[in-house]
Length: 376
Image (cartoon, rainbow, N blue to C red; front, side):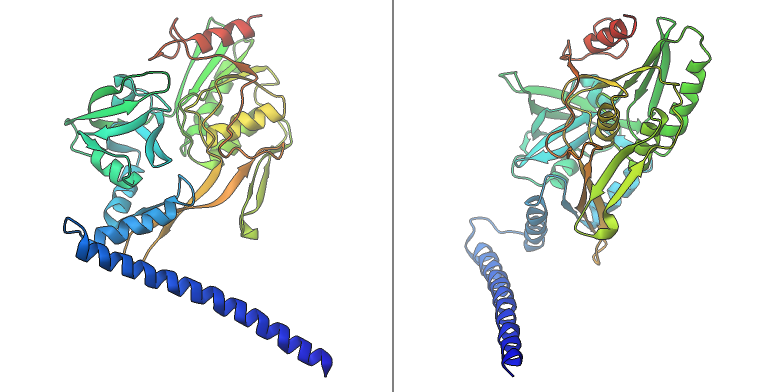
C-alpha cells in the first residue's frame, strides 16, 4: 500500500509539472494576443495584421538560428521555381546574422560576382530601403525583379570604412557547377561552384581525363565561394579522393536522423598530391569535403577559414501552402568536430590578394601559392 501511495504521489507531481508548463504556454499565447491587440489599436500607423503574424512566425524561427525561416505561399513558390537551375536574379547566396542580411557567397560569372560583391558583405540597403530588422525572405523579395532591370544595393564590408554601393542588372542565372583545365601542363585544376545533381559525375570525368597525362603531379580542388548544395554529392566527391574512413556524420534529436557515411575503397587520383582551396564563401557541403580530406590528411587545405554552416535544413510544407525551413541536424567531421559557426581552418592561410580576384589569373594569390606548392 505504501508503494502504491508513493507511486500516486509521484504521478500527481508530474501531472502538476506538466499542467503548470502548459499553463505558462497558454499565458504566453494570451499575452501575445494582448500585444497584437494593443499594436492594432495604439500603433501610430495602421498595420496589416496578417503580415504582422507572418513576421512573428518568422521571428520565432530566426530566434533558433540564422538558417531557419518562414516562407509565405508566394516565397515558397518562388523558391521552388528558382531550384530548377535557371532563374532570374543577382546570383548570390544570402543568410542572416544578428538580424542583418549577409552574403554567404556570390556565384561565379553572375551579375553579383561581376559587380564585385564578396562573401561576408553585409547588405544594409536595397533600393534605398533599410533591410536591417526585416526578415531574410522580405530582403530577398526586395532583390527580386524582372530580368534586365537594375537594382542598387548598399553593403558594408570588413576592413572598409565607407559603405559600398553596387548597381546590378538582373540576369537569367545558369549555374555550371564544374570547370576544369590543365594548368602548367602538369596540374589538374577543378573548380566546383556548387553541389548539384551532376557535380560528382562531371568531377569524375575530369579526374579520369587528367589521369591520362603522364606528367601529372597533382590536383587542385577549388571550393572558394561555393555555398554548398546536396549532401549526397559532397559524400561522393570526398570519396573520390579517399581509400576508406568516415566522411561525415549527422546528429539530431531524432534517432532516424543520426547517420554516418564512409568512403569506399579506391582513390581515383591514385594518391596524387591534392590541394583544396577554400575561403569565407566556402560553406556547408564545401566544408564537409574540405573537413573530411583535412581530417584524413589526404589534402592540404589552403586559403581562408570557411563560413561555418554545418547544419541540415529541411523544407516542411504547411497547410497554407507556405513552408518552414527548419534546422533538423548538425554535421560532424570524422574528428568529431562540428562545423557550425566554426568552419574549417586551412592548413596554410593565404589571404585573397585582390578585391575582385579572377580564378586562374596572375592576380590570384591563393592559386599561385597552390601551384608553387605542387611544383616544389
